[in-house]
Every structure is written in C-alpha cells, then in structure tokens.
Length: 586
Image 1 (cartoon, rainbow, N blue to C red):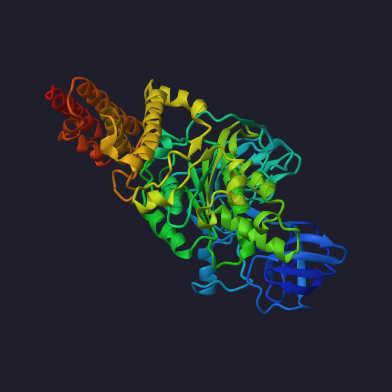
Image 2 (cartoon, one colour):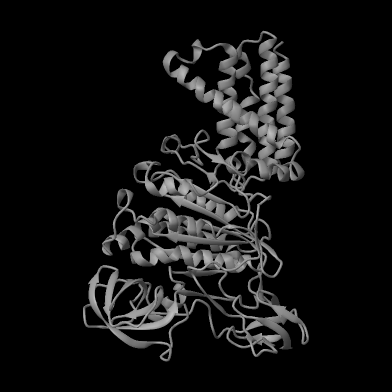
C-alpha cells in the first residue's frame, strides 16, 4: 500500500484494548477491511470486525508497548498493493513493503515499527512507449503502452479496471515516473503506470477457461506421472524434513512460467535466506537472463508478526493476477498455507470466535477456496490469454494428512503431491509418494504431450504406473516370505520397478544436469526402462534365470541417464547394449 499522506489520514479513535496482534478501538469511523494506523508509532493494521462503537483491528506489526488511550487513524481505504513497473526483482514483506528500501531507511538489517514505504519506486523514471495514438478508443483493461521492466519482462501499461475508458486525446513516449500521466482520455481520465488494487478482491476477467497446457516443471515424477496445468492448482503436503521447500524452490526455478511469485508465508528465516541468496545467481533456462528478472519474492518469515502472515497470501495472488492481465503465465508458490491457516486461527481465537475442528476458524474452508479459486486460465478483459497457477505447500503436524488444512485443501486442488517421510529417510528425493499422489489434469493434458513429445506418452505413463502398483502389492508378500520365494517373473517385475524408482522417480536437485529434466528426456528415460523390461521378459521366457538377467553389466547404467547432457545418444547406445547382452544369454 502506498505510504499514507497527512491528508489521507485522520485521527478518529483511541485504543480500548490490546491482545497480541488484535487491537480494539473506540470511536473509530471506519469500514470493514479499511487500513488504519495504530498507536503513537503508527503501526499498520486492518479492520476485521465492527460492533457498535468498538472496532477490532488486526495489526501487521509487533504491538508490545502499545497501550489503551493511544490514537488510531483511519485511511478510509482497504488494504491495497501498488501495481506497476518495478515489482520484478523485488523482495517484499507481507504487506508489500520493499525490504531493501526499509533497510536503507533505517540503516539497519532489523525492521523498526511504524516504518512504511510504497510498494514500487514512485520517483524512478521508466521508458514508456505508447501502443495507442490520439483518436483510438480504449476500454477498461486495454493495453496503452509498454515499459521494459527487466531484460526478460515487458511491462504492459493497462487502463485500470475501474476506469470507463474512451477516446485517446494524447499519448506520448518518453521517460516518466509511475505517477505521471502517460495517456489522456476525452472523458478526463488520466492513465499512469501505477495502479492500486484491494488485495482481497479478485481482479476482473472476461472468461475462465479449461486449461489445456501443462506447467512443465522439469521434475520427472511431476511432469511424467502427476502433471499440473497452466492455470491449475496443486498442494504439496508433507511432514518436517520431507522436502516441501526444496520442491517449491525447484518449481520456482524451472517451471515453464513467464512470471514467478514466491510467497514465504511463516517459514523459517534460513529457508527464505536461501531463496534470496540462490535466485539472483540462477539463470533462466528459457532466456539465459537472471532468474530474478521474472521473479517477485514475498518474505514473511516465522518471526514476523502473525497478522501480516494472513495478508501475504493475498498480496501475492493480487500481484500474480496483475501480470496475468498482461497475458503472462504466472506461477505462485505459497510456502506454506498451514502457517497462513495458523495465523487465521490465532486471530480467530483472540476474537473469541466459535472454534471449528482443531481450533481452526469455521470459515477455514471458505478462505482456502477463496484463495485457490483465484487461480485459473483466463481470457482477460483486454482479450489476452493468461494464467495463474497456484502451488501451495501444506505442513500438517506430524505428517497427519487427516488434519483440517490438508483435508480442506484436498477438496479444492486438482493435483496432490504427497510427500513421504519414509522416502525422505531413505534419501529418495523428491520424496513424493507415487501411490498416494494424483493429478486430475492428466486426460486434458495428454493431447499436449502427444503433440509435443510422443504419440504414446499416455501409454508409457500407464505402463509405469501399473508396474509400480504391482510392486506395491508384491512388497507385502516379500515382507512375509522374502523375495526369493516369489516366482521369477515377479522377481523381475520388482527389478524393473527398482529402476523406475531409482532412475525415473528420483532426481538430484543439486546436480547441474539432473536438476532440470525436459519432457522429452523424461519420456526417453521411461522408454529406456521399458525397453529393458521387454528384452528381460523375452530372455526369461527363453529360459534364462532371473539372476543372470539382473547381473548384466549394462542395466545399472539406466540410473545414470539423468545426469547425461547428451542423453539421446546415451539412451540409444545403452538400449542397444542391453539388448545385445540379454540376447547373448539365450
């Protein structure tokens, strides 16, 4: 939100009581969701309840030392974000205050209370090039010009959604600040590069469509077995240490999205530090430019005030919708929605509301739905097509997927990537349990994979799923009687499944080559394992003992396909070698 001016703030009321982040004020002239400034230090807060003369406020900063009788000032406006050029390569807190600006203001790495700053630099000059000229008709949402925001992103300046539009009177190119008028309309409306939008209100769109294109993540288990669509929703639940954050980092680094908005919601500070240190050093695989040139980070760590955690999710999704309106595909990573829900629980308990399951507020499911429903593949009001994909991590206590946040999330999202502590303990990463995970986007995305990868993509995937399912059933028998008691064909199935797990489902996020795997390479690895399966069963049918089949020298090389840069030639040579060695046995 833009820093409040003296004219926009008025002293309206006084503090009646303080309970942690919840403050009640008496005599305050305000509406629901209005932003207010609390106490002598002017701490930012938001109105969440009005009852008679008492107004309840959730404060986005630490309230220690604030007491009854101190003034409360109302802006008369809801919590908004500043939208315009300058949001890429930026790092914000939960209410869109740029952390680098706050640091320079205070000359300290620690935030003082009551310090405010606009979400974007209001004085910086940007090179504006109009795409309209005098006499053109423009409507709400239409693009009137472009700004080179970063080396990667061309920022499209749009008519604000709440403008009527009309005939262009003047449009000039040149250098302007975001508050200067760049286009004038005949009805007196003046268009600048700066917009404000309430975070709790979805930006308008013309139509929400069924997504038909995958959000390619570069992670084999996700793209190969459980894909998410551009404009889709996914949840990554898992216990502590199972790899939620690393999976989110991988998606943020490699996902096939034009823009990435990464929201660190209540996670540990060292994890956010890792993101802030890593991302500026990474190159975008699509353009070769710095990854931060298309990334916006919102850092709201666990030691920050709990109420700001509740708003940071909305800040992130509003920024994502703004770039969606320009026709970009945006991926929003929320890590984690459990911390967001815990913030709601704390605020709710301090309001003395009737608790729901496990103390969460009764409206938990409604809030989660409200957030995830803002994802989608849209035709925007200006005729562009853009998407917002939302991937939310969930941190169930003790890895209990039956707890309310996980269960309510599962009712909403269409892709479920279940992280497994047992897999993580065995150092199998990503630790996604292939028996519990699912994607409801498979059928609508298969035509894209058929067109862009191979005709038999769906058949190969189904073969892998069938083998892994059979292995799961056989493992129960193995635990009772041992592997050697199984028939030879079932022993061979277990061997094939082992290669599927080790060569296909496992992936090294820290290896320079294996960290990203294209759909073509994902398909190639699977077909190589399938080719070994076919030749091995032919050898078994010809009477070759299963021990000799397992002992061929070429088979273990399947596990090294992922780290090969020239993987196509490697797979071709390996397949020929496996075929030759197996056929020599009979």
